[in-house]
Picture 1 (cartoon, rainbow, N blue to C red):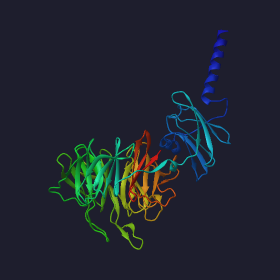
Picture 2: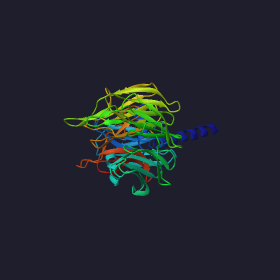
Picture 3: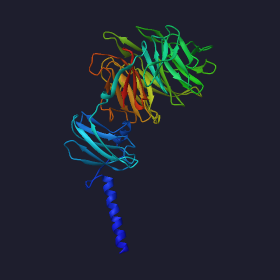
Amino acid sequence: MHNLKSTFIFIFCMILFFLGSSGCESNETPITLSPQTHEVAQLVFATHPVARYNASDQEVWVGAPPHTAAPSSIVRIAPSGLRETSVRATPEGSFLYKFKGDPQIEVSLRWISPEGTWHEETLGVTNPQDNLFINVGAAGKYPNRLTVRDSLAWVVNSGDDEITSYNLETLVAGGERIRLPQWSNPWEVAFFSANEGIVTTLFGGVFIFDTAKENVEEIETGEFRPFASPNGCTALGTKAWVTNPNPISYFPTEMGEGWLSEIDLNSKRVISELKTQWLNPQYVITDGKLIYVSCSGTIDFLPPDYIAHALTSGGVHVIDPERKQILESYEIGLGGPGPMALSPDNHFLYIGSAVGGCLFRIDLKEKKVLNDAENPIIISETPGTFIPFVEVDSQGLLICGSFNDDTLHFVDSWTGEKNPFPFFEGVKLSNGSSDFWGIQDGSFCLRNGKKGILILSTVKSGLHWLEL
């Protein structure tokens, strides 16, 4: 009798367990996703449960990021007018379900959280465009670059010859401003301490600034060549690296020998130079150990349409800053390689084009170019457009702008795939209006407790917010 009672209790508990796991009495086998699929990997790009319409396949995708559901638990998904389906969450607690549908459909979800509580939610199909807030802050005159640090956004304004801080929550210009010499045309900023940074100016040299003391000191070149239209800059430890495109003339454009200047941040002096293989080095970034430099080659605006064309080949150098030595050189070709960003594991380097709406990609682990000027990742086919910035977040989502079509685009930096879930299309600043803002830069950040992208435009100076 004791054994029968124990057996009954055991069976009863198992029934309760299975009912609790499924959320209903259905014997339907749940859909289980393979953890190796790229679609599952892209769930990390979502910030909450979301339903999106994939127009190319006429499918609705319902997904949620890791840590939404209890690991490997059952999620009940009920599209309006369709049969309810059970999906097993991944071991990381994400889930995904795709079905034929339309943008007007609603989807009811029921799942167990990692803490063991039930959640219910009804989702409508949304578009990232719906979360775009235009002109939430006024930038200065001819803004170039955007840098977000802690609770402040810093904008480099060429026309105002200053770097202006903005409260990240209100996007109102703050009291901290760094004023640079008149007509110096400041371009790029790199911070190297809580309140200190380095800034390049196209016409006035390179400066170190202190936001706390509000002072500016010019970098001395000493025995080395004077700066030649210094453009990109990056800081690593007590050193900084600055690119010198060295233009000789415009229309027609002629470039002189390009080089990098290494700067000691303590003495505020140039301490070495490194010549580049290709002309027109413009951008430089670091992964905390190595330096990456993109050289655009000669670019000119040719008649009859005066659209930018690459006249000479460009490429990318990988540099060991300690030995001051070029470790690798990668030819990109006639593509005007420009702004760069690395995948989170430093496996892939992405480079935006200065003469077209495309990206180039280098596999740094295998040391080979995957996408060059002959085989680029096409972002936009709008004539005359280019890529003014590229940025990757910690999850691997890449964003870049295409200038002439005023659009923010999304790429999976792990695979190079365009428009990954939940971003099936780009987000356009003008959004059907006749406005043209001129998307120039963007940065992932938290604002009012929510993750999003702060966007800077330059034709109509403004700050814009895309909530993710």
